[in-house]
Amino acid sequence: MPDILDVPTDRRPTAQPETHTGRFLIISVVAALGGFLFGFDTSVINGTVGALQTQFAASSWALGLAVSSALIGSAIGAFSAGHIADRYGRTRTMIIASGLFIISALGSGLAFSLWDLSIWRLVGGLGVGAASVVAPAYIAEIAPAHLRGRLASLQQLAIVVGIFMALLGDFAIARAAGSASNPGWFGITAWRWMFFSGLPPAILYGLGALFIPESPRYLVANGREQEALKVLRDIEGDTAPSKVVEIRRSVRSDHTPHLADLKGGRFGLLPIVWIGIVLAILQQFVGINVIFYYSSVLWQAVGFSEQNSLLITVITSVTNILTTLVAIAFVDKIGRKPLLIIGSLGMALTLGLMAYLFGTAPLDPSGKPVLQGAAGTTALIAANLYVVFFGFSWGPVVWVLLGEMFPNRIRALALSIAAMAQWMANFLVSATFPSLQAIGLGWAYGLYAAAAVFSLFFAVRFIKETKGRELESM
Image (cartoon, rainbow, N blue to C red; front, side, top):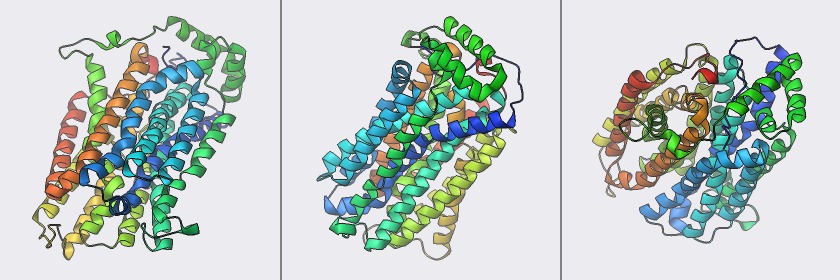
C-alpha cells in the first residue's frame, strides 16, 4: 500500500504566494468537512441520552454501549481508510464516508430499539473513522511545511465546530419540544430529530468532495501525471512541473508497508510507533469526550435543568472552538511540544479540582452528588477551563503530530494503527463512564486527572519537536 501521507520531497522552505496559500486553505477547509461530521456524529447523541434511557428502559451498561458503538466503527474505519484511499482515491473515500454518515443519520432517527440504534451508530462510526484519517492525510499531501501545522489543525477546528453545531441543534430541538422525550415537528419525538439533523452536513460533505481536486500524490502514484500537473498548477503555479518530478521520485522510492515493518525494539514495535499509539490513547484517557457525550446528563445530575444543562454544554463547545483557534495561531510558531506540556499541566489541575468537588459533595436521597452554592459555580468554571487547556493542546496537536511524526516508509500504516488505538481508547472511556458515574464522579474525574499527570511526563520525556520540518526528514 503506497504511503498516503507523503508530500513532495523539496526540503527548502520556500514562501508561497498569497493566492496559493488561499488555494491551500480552501481545499483544506473542504477536506476538513469530514472533521465537522466527525464531531457532529459523535456528539449529537449527547442531547438524546436521557430520552433514550427513558424510552428504552436502558441499563447503564446498555446505554454506554449505544453511546460508544460509533467508536467501534470508527476504529474499524480508521484502520481501513489508508487502503481504501490508496485504491479508490482520497476524494472518493470522502464520498464513501459521506454515504455512511447519511445512512447512520436516517437509521438512528428511525431506530426502534437500543440495539438497532447501536448498529446505525456503528455505521456512522465507519464514516467517522475514515474521515479522521483521510482528511489529515489529504491535507498533509498538499500543505507546505511552513503551513502544515495550521492547515492540519483545521481538522480539529472542524471537529469542534461539528460538536458545537450538534449540541446547539440538540438544545434548540429540545427547547422547541419542551424536552428530548416530547413530540416535535409532525409528531416525531424530539430525540429522533436530533439524529435527523445530521443529514444536511452529510450531504454537503459528499457534494464538497465532488468539487475538490484529487490528491496529486495519488494521481502520480496511479500514472495520471497530466491530471496531477493540472491540479498542481492551480496550487503551486510555475513550480508545478518540478513538483511532479519530486512526487514521482518519492513514489518510486516508496516501499509497500506491512505490519512486519513496525516490529522492533524491546516491546515488539518500533519506539516511534509506540509513541504514536500512547499519544493517541492519552488524548482520550484524559476524559475529554465525557464532557461532550455525557455533559447534559452530568449537569442534570448535580441540579441543573435539562435545558440549562444543554445550554452549558453549548457554551463549553464554543470555548472549545475559541481555544482551537489559539492552537492554529501558535502551533507553527511556538511548536507542538510546548503546547502539549502547558495543556497537560492545566488539565491535571482542573481535573483534580473537579475530582475533589464531586468526591466531597453531599449526596441526595438517590445517591447523586449535589453541588451547592460556590461548589457548583467552581465546578462549572473548572470544567470549562479544562476544555480550554485541552482545546489548544492535546486536541489539535495530537492530530498534527500523528500526521507528520512517522517516517515515510511506515507513515500510512503507523497512522492507521495509532488512529485505531485512539478510537478504541475513546470507546473504553465512553463505555465505562456510566458505570464510573454510578460508583462516584469523584473517582471518574480522579482517573482522568491521573491520566493528565502521566501525559505531562510523556510529553516531556518522549515527544520531539516537529515544527517546520519536512515530512521526509522525520
